[in-house]
Image (cartoon, rainbow, N blue to C red; front, top):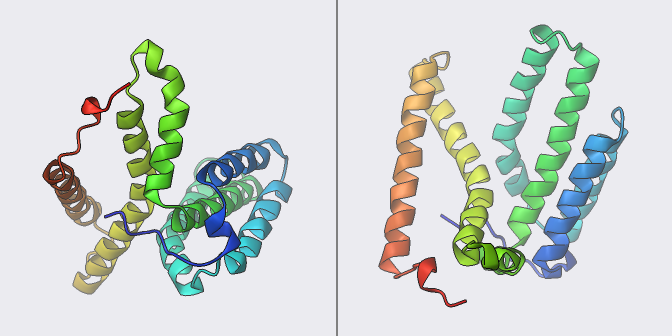
Length: 205
């Protein structure tokens, strides 16, 4: 379930999780704040520059990007044709999301989930006086980050099965098996955590 991390001896892998996640947040804010397409192009160039620095297989990265790119293409069509925003604005929005998804994928593939959990625990530890459980909240956020590309992979598998059966236009044929897969993944994860005796509520202050 959490095996998306790809170990490589690279500078990007050695960067602390806080540096990578903080940088991702900063780039996201800059991309959304800058007008036009320039922020998206700069973020995309940054992602493409970090890809060889991280020494990740290009085929692996492209596999994780395939489903999001397909959804972005659909978003482009909806915005350009139905939302009335014009194709230029729709293209800028798609390019922004594509660049940010690339950077988020690089963060996911180069950061261990344990490092994410430790970072989130330190951050949320500041909220312990108001009743927040840092360990539980950290685990929830770390799993959310990891589940995004996993869900994209599940969508890709369901779409391939649809095409093989000739029902790729059926919405029910997409969402019903996808929901089954999601619930199965959740059950497997809950069983794995229970088998390991993990209970964040038992963690001391």
